[in-house]
Image (cartoon, rainbow, N blue to C red; front, side, top):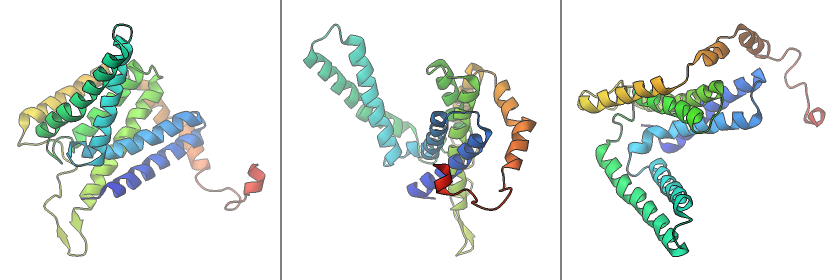
Length: 243
């Protein structure tokens, strides 16, 4: 299995290439492109959130505990004293960081359902729904956010499959086939639940018509082909000319 740094680099390379392609289209502002890149990298570490000792899961639950406490303080700020609010914030953090975290690690198995293709679709569609319904971004931007999460996620799974093949010893490791899976026959109920939740998110997501129209736009394809290679000579524009 690939290590954490390899997953980060792989996801960054794929999402970086994707954002560069979108930059060529000259359709999205730099802030949106930066957001797409970050989401791609996040997607690259999501498959490891089911590992109790992984860095991403600790980051995720630490952040979730802090954010939840913050919103509780905002909600009860007018009713409780300063000490009560601090205690409420601390209690919510401890509950999520240690209580919910412990429950989550008991219910999940590393390289289990979360480490699968349907999980990639689940997180991707969840990002789309969250972007539209919570952050109120445009439909095209929301679908691109979900796409980058999915690309990063699938990059992680693909790297794990590639690392399952030992080229030096010319053998295939036992972990081969466990990354790019469609579910687990050992846990059919959890697999069915994952598919059900993914279908629900697809139902809640906005239509992808604008996203598909953008991806399959012939004008976009012609533009990318025109700018695929330099028309005169390589690196003809110097740094001085740019400024």
